Image 1 (tube, rainbow, N blue to C red):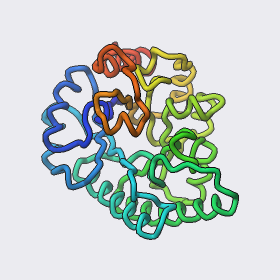
Image 2: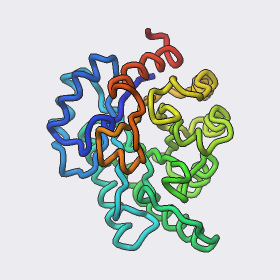
Image 3: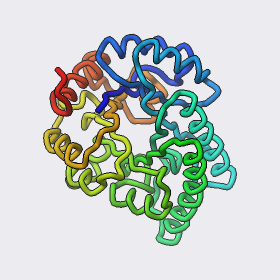
Image 4: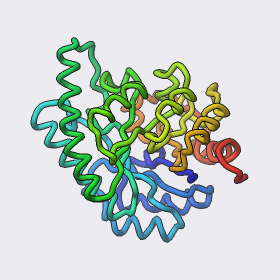
Length: 284
């Protein structure tokens, strides 16, 4: 099991100049970096891969940024824009030697509403249609897609692991897995450990986040039961800390971070990683 850090904690957008973060991440003890790519044109993937390897990090995952205009349940134009963007991320993942593309790869973040059953059925049909096409492309490139349920305030489409499993079944691709995040699970799941057990081998990626988006471990979650559940299902992929602070203005606004969560931003990766090692591995 490897431990990673999402780049949104320190920068938005991630560009070639952002590779300066890698040495610090390795010094803290991380094994992998999760690169959030807002625009594929922002990076030279070969350069970024070389910088990560030079620092001793693997690019564990490519994180999708589903901003305006990227929506598999939106207009025809939005669907095409989302498909072009996500296929580009798959291509970048190949060059970066990252095994997976992760995140809410179904709809623009922030789209919420009390849709009637007919509209919900239409949205589901559109997302399944587009994910089937994207998954087929990912299969050909040997890249895994991990779809992330978000909390009710960020999407009305996919909130729980049960909904995620239904989506996976409808798409029916071996390239499609679930991506669970403790921040969202704390809001939407009645029991985080039980949700992990239910997902089982369909779990492809995992985010460890504090309940307030701060240090994972310095919160009210039952991390012992979460770790036990991951162990029971044989999860061996990355555990990534994804937290946000007011320092990165664009992400802070998108994630509703209106106050300083921790005294120092570096407390999140440094203290969080120590906690993760204590519960998820034998490392100290």
